[in-house]
Length: 356
Ligand SMILES: O=C(O)C(=O)C[C@]1(C(=O)O)C=C[C@@H](O)C=C1
Image 1 (tube, rainbow, N blue to C red):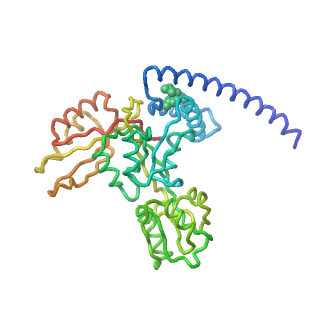
Image 2 (image 1 turned 90 degrees about the vertical axis):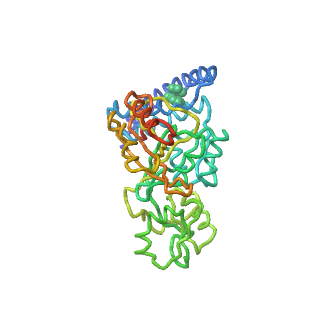
Image 3 (image 1 turned 30 degrees about the vertical axis):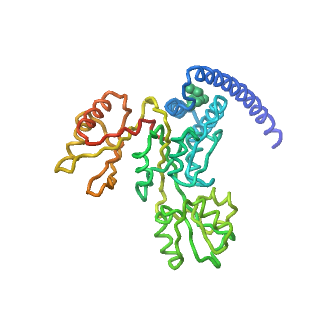
């Protein structure tokens, strides 16, 4: 066996040497890019460029490596090169171990400075204040719908959406001992409790369910108190040394959460983009129908439509709309101008590359 392995490993060593030399070359060019950007104060993180590179490697991938795996490698290569220009700081809903943290690494790779925050509000504050270059906030979950706090803060703050990222959300039930003996409470974020309610009703109907600030927070509590079980990601469980009682307890096996990358950067077109905006109309018959007419007229597809009460005492609503295309694309630009003319309130949240 050794005789057969040795020449193959020699080939791998030779290829690794070439990969390393090419990575160094790429890194040096990234440093030059960094100098050029520093001269003009241009942004280091360019989501549209990174999206194009990642789409390109998937299109050109000759195999046998899977597209997703090749993209993971290139995401890390870009992350390391970007860090040579500047290590970007990204605020997220902490503590470490949350799905928000996973979303940060999924979008920025691991050469990033994560800034865990105590609440979604704090993520917005840190991003607005410039303590963080970007923030990553949950927008919607495939089972539970919109994250209302995020929607409200999109409206209330000056942050724009620079990117989006979607990750699978798999919940595990975990305790300090790995068993449910002596457990009286299950802690998790309210969204996670909702996403696992059928499973909990079936397997632990009598146990108290307690909503806490985040799933990772639940993991912290469970790591200190053997009478508490946490619902969280296995990553959080590993971080806080919990034993898995049952993995994959979410009611929907395809459960996903979509996150927005928020900041001050107006992202350029990438070729496959989304545009998000908030609208309000006067409270009149047919107003919403008329409001959206420019989209059909200019052939712009709407991928999401969400309403939130305006909370001004009357039954008025804000509409959160996602469109296909970039604000600079001709049909989208025309539709946006007409939407703005028809709306009592109009706020463009941003255009950004469609998440992988
Ligand atoms: O093209 C750039 O603007 C770069 O800075 C290079 C690079 C890369 O490594 O490919 C790194 C960071 C940017 O977010 C995009 C791409």
